[in-house]
Length: 454
Image 1 (cartoon, rainbow, N blue to C red):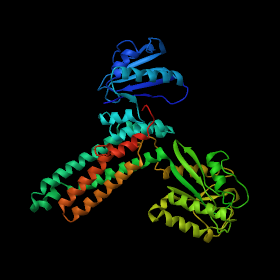
Image 2 (tube, one colour; image 1 turned 120 degrees about the vertical axis):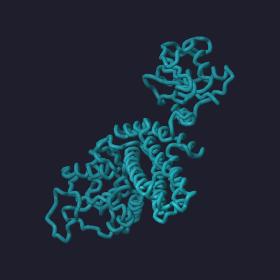
Image 3 (cartoon, rainbow, N blue to C red; image 1 turned 90 degrees about the horizontal axis):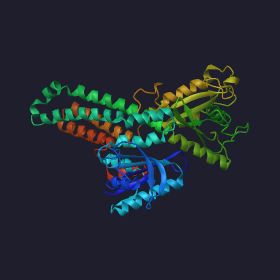
Image 4 (cartoon, helix red, strand yellow; image 1 turned 180 degrees about the vertical axis):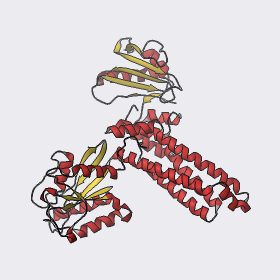
């Protein structure tokens, strides 16, 4: 196994800088660079020495012997001053010593320290991914959810569900040798109830994962409506700064404008788009085409109407939005009646239900923010079942849910062999989340997105 070395702190100047070493040559490097043997897991103040025995820097050295280290290998951490020059000198010295000792020593690849921690069973894959999520967390809630996954909350839920699946599989497969007892077995072993419990547990995990994904990536909300309905003004009001240009001229917004806002720690990506109308102006047409592409990618759409009644309701565009999102996703459409400060009584036939707001005065904006939080899957409790999650994990949970549904179908026709197969495929899908089953290509893709030194 190669020994890997890297600067573990962010590039640029800082108060401290950390050079990390992991692998069989770590102990030898520590004895040469530090000129002494280090007591395990104790910080020692000393000078880091070059080949001539002259100090490179002054700092703390900590040696973690295998297997009680982050990677499960011998690990050395040298904590010195954070200047780029001194860090590079220390990194170069560690590489020189490693080669002098005859070891295979090289610079670490992105995420390689954490990848070794995974391969050495110090972390499962969900926990390893949570390391990167914690580093990249842009809000307090995102950081807390990533820490929950790193500490094993997500993995524990998955393992508990897998235990239930294994238990039921064993019972079903034990009965396959006695087909004449199928009916008695189903009732005696409460197979139907056990499957329903598994399905309910899986649903709860999926909801938690959706909240975690929203915390990690943010909810993408697209503003849609006719020109001059106040989309750009609403974006500015939610962002509490002038992001988008606002004029009385219809069609001012020609291209999308994306701004990230944070509501109670939840990142929300607001996308302002070109107003929808029939036009022969080519540039505006291109902007409208991009609006529809944004709707196709949206997690939620804010459909704006004019509360003053001056801009007619565009029922054709609304119908197209609903058709794109699909009947099952209509909860992702929020109707917003803007210009509440200019609202006039309208005939009952022309009234539209929605959240009444004024981008100008701020009326109704708090209600709108709370609605966006609910769309992001947030129940207002920062600690309720929240853990960081990724798209691949949601995909695995969705495939597991399909397998459970198929298992229920097989149970209804008493096809226990197919039932056992569906349970096994469900277990396999869940195992992809924690890494019991994972391809080398997947691991390479996951860890390549980490920063160097982690």
